[in-house]
Length: 130
Picture 1 (cartoon, rainbow, N blue to C red):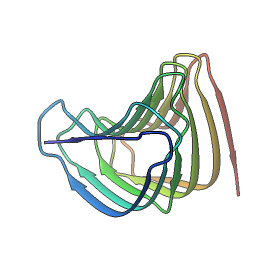
Picture 2 (picture 1 turned 90 degrees about the vertical axis):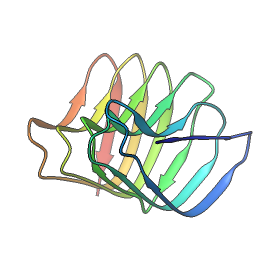
Picture 3 (picture 1 turned 180 degrees about the vertical axis):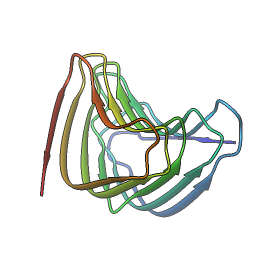
Picture 4 (picture 1 turned 120 degrees about the vertical axis):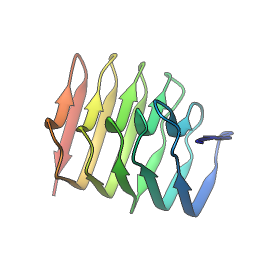
């Protein structure tokens, strides 16, 4: 299960559906580049993370994305920066988790039906609007 996305420098990924059923896995890992990801649907019912961005050279733009499930719906970590636009996270234990000196700029981010916390920010910058 899961998929490592070859970000390269300028990936433009659209209309991607990912189903991850690996227990403790990561459905989608963005580990490099400044790609744009649009119209993603990530289902990660038994996974640790639905969508993870990691590393200081990682600055993706995630647009019109739905993440369902995962212990963490979206995890932005290890000095990465992520723009979230019109993104919905649902049925995760913790919806949006940002830590490790990372940064999120979000607009129209909806977090629904999370068991514990909708947004968790530790030692990082999280700006959500709209």
